Length: 125
Image (cartoon, rainbow, N blue to C red; front, side):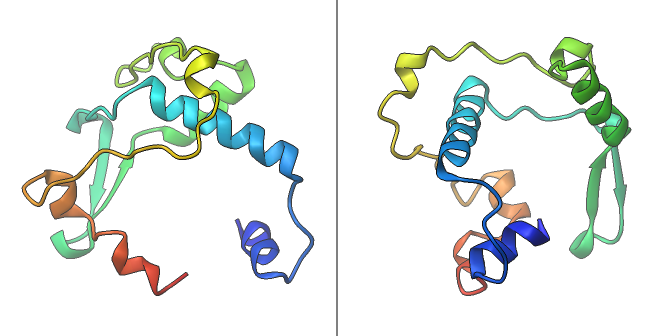
């Protein structure tokens, strides 16, 4: 991440070319379109800290990520109990994508209450 940030602000050569970045972005867009965000049951989570500074992590996530990478499988293909398979996104759904419309988060939604709006971070960029 440090190298990526340094590349963006000009302190270091870029991390990858536009061809690779474009393919990665297309892949990320397809992943976003393939599945909704699902809740993970509390028994698979680790929580620490007080309410104002609470951190939440998924139990054994590092091991799960390494296994998925080593075996070239998705978490749902590894039968991780909280993972849900997504749908296959046909290529024609990705042709011409310029930007994704992110779901609207309303003030009553749990995610809105637990996270600051993106505008809070705009001045930090």
